[in-house]
Length: 82
Image (cartoon, rainbow, N blue to C red; front, side, top):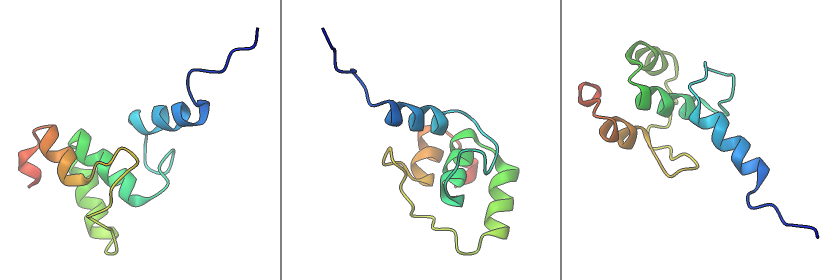
């Protein structure tokens, strides 16, 4: 009996890549995704560097999980980033 998979392998792979703390460029498709992850992890030095070197950074960018940088900062209690 053939069974259908209970999940979409590509979606799971994407989730695992985005949920792991990776270094810039390793799994991020954009600077905005990397920035959101830095906000989630409270990587202040990386955040400063991105803001200084990426003048076109879209601070309103929303990721695949419908999160943005402000959501990640607030949800993880990193109030010093406000």
